[in-house]
Image 1 (tube, rainbow, N blue to C red):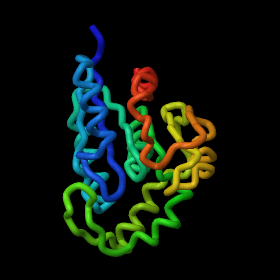
Image 2: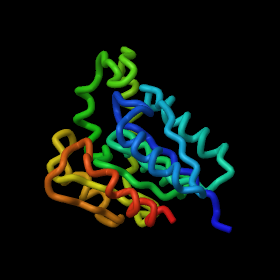
Image 3: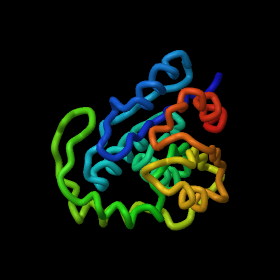
Image 4: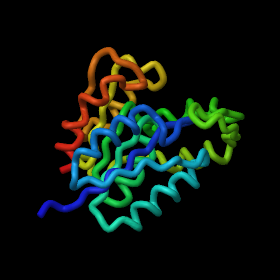
Length: 191
């Protein structure tokens, strides 16, 4: 009997479990019986978001893999490295992007919930702590990168995951609009 897999999808900055990729993945995985899917609404505080993610991992009785988009990719990389899990990241924030994220300090409104919140200097400093310097198991990571990402420098992402599995494609955007087409490839990696 095939072991049950739990996939945790981690959304990006200022997003939610209602994100397009989360909904696409949820719909696709409903047809796959041995997969349990969870897409939590992550707290805007990186420290609290990581606490949420770690709680889900620790409470799972299944084998866990994580998928993270943008900032969720930073979180996915961190927990995968810490707990020896497989991670798939989509146009992820990596350690070398964090310096520029200092510009995010201030008030924001969530894209889906309209909730206003403050991203503080403490939140930014916490992000710096979650940027893994070097991966313990580089082959546990698969990164999907669009070279025309308008938000994050794809060169930094490719350099960071140079010893990991990577699919780097010309064109595209930060939203990774052809995500649906990549789901079979993602599942092949996770199994």
